[in-house]
Image 1 (cartoon, one colour):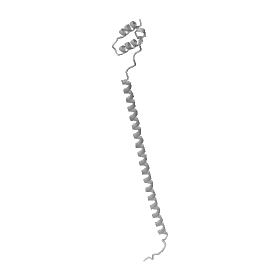
Image 2 (tube, rainbow, N blue to C red; image 1 turned 45 degrees about the horizontal axis):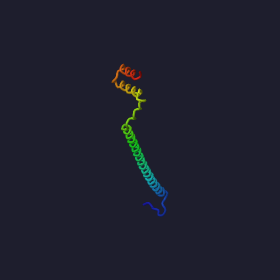
Image 3 (cartoon, helix red, strand yellow; image 1 turned 60 degrees about the vertical axis):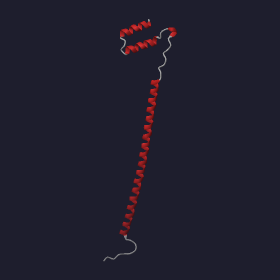
Image 4 (tube, rainbow, N blue to C red; image 1 turned 120 degrees about the vertical axis):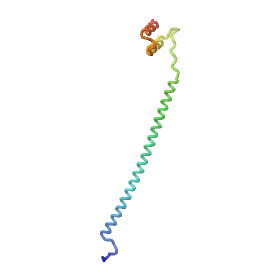
Length: 121
């Protein structure tokens, strides 16, 4: 039977104890680092989600404002026509009406030219 020493551990015992302590410290520090990284990642994801929601809300509000403004512009009555000069006919307005009728295809080129000549002359 081998003789067993009592008292302080030998070189191999000290190396084993040091390895166990170092391994435990490494495992604990690794776990702490992973937890911190996970917490940071969760916080970052929450901030990103909040920023995305805020951006979407701003876009929605902008679209609503644009739609409301467009509706108000469509609902606004057209400006009143310019008053004709001293009982005469407003030539510019009449020419614009004739041009619109021509663009819509209601008047032919000849009809447009005849109506224009009648207004101007």
